[in-house]
Image 1 (cartoon, one colour):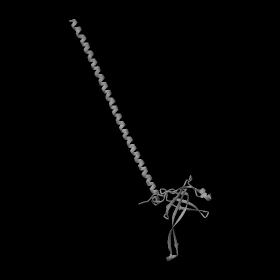
Image 2 (spheres, helix red, strand yellow; image 1 turned 90 degrees about the horizontal axis):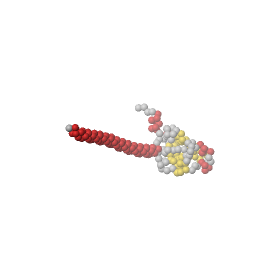
Image 3 (tube, helix red, strand yellow; image 1 turned 180 degrees about the vertical axis):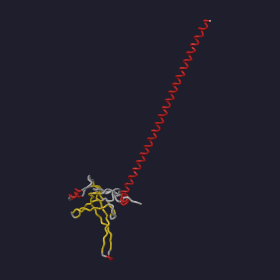
Length: 213
């Protein structure tokens, strides 16, 4: 069984992380493995390091090579770190604040000093920290509801059209029947008038014959 590169990338992309965008203030929980000693005495310890900062850039979109650049200021010095989103070393990402931005890359934040390095925004809610899969499912459900509503509306419109067509057909049939009835009435009247004329002519001819005799 052959696996294409697209299927491999799709299966290995993480879907348990929230939708991180430039302008979000986030906390990245990264696993770090430390080793001590040499040979048999070597010990490995795993700890979680938290890196909190502002997302100033995102590359790769939703692909397997997607990365985010997070910037923070510690001790008056700017520190930036690039995190690959689909790496297993990232335990979780938590969105703390959402700021309004008009650019995809916030490189101008590198020149800011003091309070300007902390942009204003609103605190993130639980919905903002939900995984992308839940949001996608909710969007799919909403789209299905809209499709069902549209289908029901289309069905109703088709039913109304069928009813209107049937009414038009019935009205046309009635008109045709009325025309036929009117033509029949006219013909019968004509025949009656012709009979009356014949009778009148016959009545006139009879007294004329009697006088000749």
